[in-house]
Amino acid sequence: MHRRQYDLPPLDQLEAFEAAARHLSFTRAADELALTQSAVSRQVAALEQFFGVPLFRRLHRALRLSDEGILLQQTVVDVLQRLHQASQALRGETRVKTVVVTTTTGFAGLWLIPRLARFTAGRPDVDVRISATNAMVNLDRDGVDLAIRYHTQEGAGAAAVRLFGEVVLPVCSPRLRRDRQRPLKTPGDLRHHCLLHMDGGAAAQLLEWPPWLRAMDLDGLKPASVLHFSQYDQMIQAAVSGQGVALGRLPLLDDLIARRMLVAPFKKTVVSPRSYFLLQSDASRRKPEVREFLSWLVAEAAAIA
Image (tube, rainbow, N blue to C red):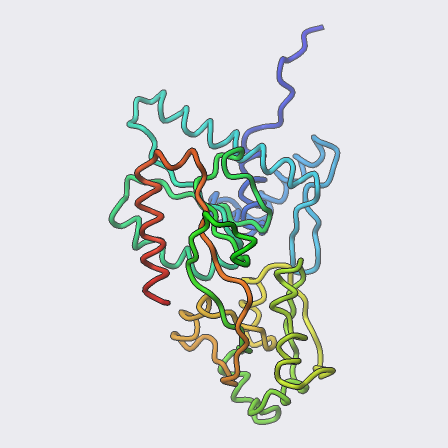
């Protein structure tokens, strides 16, 4: 009986999984791959059937990777990147100039991606690849050039470059602030509104409501209702659409506030003990395109600092 040397799933299923895992959204993955949301969902389901394990945890209004999904994501990203590079080399193209950046979904969606065109306009030959995930990766082992991490100076390490710090304050849609039935004039008025919460680890807890309310002498305040989210950009989108009040993180939300998509009803802020730090892999120090992108990132951060 003839047996295949490699027992592998179809490449299109792996591509669909990688995009869905990176965005933590079947809809966004479908937009990137020019497919329908249902097509991406079917491909992921077929991949789960192939391996016999769930790759995602499908929650209410949220999508998370399972433990098996996290393991597969690391391998699939590496394999697809190697295939991409080999494909371009075989077609006789010039050396692929890539910059692989890993960062949180919130930082990628709210700060980095909106500014990325400023870099690519001057360097269209550089392929910038953003891996938006809250999972910590080993830069050299996983083939990642740069990481932008939310950490303390001690936790980030001596080699890390600090981009900027962060202050926290409530934000909501202008429509919600104009609600005459439930005015938002003082922090105590939050008891009449829905508060949007982030689920997550220690970093998320630092940006949750209890520390901010405690700083405002409002320990024990009970809101009208709460909504929980697994991703920061999802929570901010809910705030933009008027579903409740979120704890905004500046300067991540500077652009949304400047465009009046969000407003800050109170001026009182809390300074986060963490900052955004830039780390570089050892292997990438030989790549001039990475050095250029790093310098651009530092300049962009300095412009808002």
